[in-house]
Amino acid sequence: MVNRHILLEVARHLKTIDPVSPDDNETNRFFANQAAQFRDVLVSENRSKTLVHLFDYLVARSGDPRAPKEIEIAMTVFGKSAQFDTSQDSTVRVHIHRLRRQLESFNYGKSGKLLQIPKGDYRLLLTEEAESADDDAILIEVHSKPSGQKRTWTVIAICFAATAIFWGMLLFSARSQDSVTSTLRQTSFWKPIAAHERLPLIAAGDFYMVVESGSDGKIQRLAMRPAIRSGRDLDKYLRMHPDQYSKLRDRDIHRLPATVAMGAAEILPIVASVRPDHAMADIIPVSQISQETIDSNNIIYIDRFSELGMLRSPALGQSHFAPGPDPNELRDLPSGRTFRVRAAAENQIGRDDVAADPYGYDYGYIASYPGPSGNQIIVISGMEDAALAQMVKLVGDKRQLGILSRQIGDAKAFEALYQVRTSGGLIFDTRLLIARVLEASKV
Image (cartoon, rainbow, N blue to C red; front, side, top):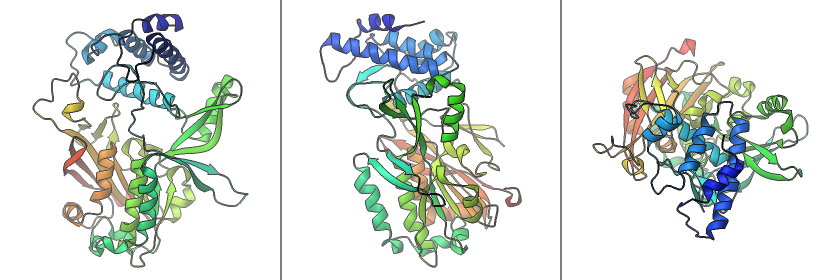
């Protein structure tokens, strides 16, 4: 087992890239201290010791001028043979992804030098700026009103350009109803919403944040923990870990990824344009949706595919798609096919299978089906941000929806999977892979 003393010894031999170039001894001590703190978190939050062993290995290799390759990690940490096929087995990538996400949670709210595993790499570095897919996330706090009243959402922090763009779009959308052609209301996707007497609610996927306090009772940071997705989950966790009662608190704080927030804002004028009354829909967080809300409203969900299982609706109950064991995989159950998200070639460091195809691939998902009381449920989703953003654009594109309509006809219940090809942060094309009619009576 690697303890703080061993970590400090490893740190003394570091040759990591340090963008701010402070005194080497100070940097090494800081690295060792952060590594030890994070390791304590890994040990306390993970029943399996695999992530701990992986982290120990990356710490031990952090002084090497060359980042370890996937096959080296597979053999050393996971006990694989030299014949291990990294293109067929995603064990290493899955665990690196999980470790990276836990590091992002550990670093959340901190500034200055941070421990990170850069995307597309298997190296542990101490860098000055955080690298996260959700750097533009919007942080939202829920305040309870007196009994019998609904909760109000108040923005307490919006990072960088998301402030002006997001709120600007919300204000502008009220006057931009005519910017989206009314012919969208004739498509299979929007027709149920256009014809329905009830105005839809736009449900934006959010993440629950737990407040962590130090031994002195002062708040240290906000954190996302995989095992804690709500206040109820926190209560269960504290019953199993009574030593954490004084350290973890519920303040009903949620994190709204910028891509989801922007998607909700873009859907507003589309909904207004297809409705005969041009009424503006409300945006609510998924965490605040009750069964009563689902039973009495049309709902338009906007969230990542991996989070749809958390929806308070049978959104995936009749779907023939399911998340794979790898966070980057989606499975089509009838055919047994697996669709894997892949970064573009410039992010595939150390991989030998991308020379012939330099593009990245993401996958988008949309669905529409009747709800429990004659209402309509719509899902707009993607495996990663690129596909999610592209699906938001696609449902406002008459041509793309026309292609879908020709596949599913006038079906009131259907789902579709799209492949989104990317490179250098740009979308090159979007292709419909599967369009499937669902049995409305069983949804």
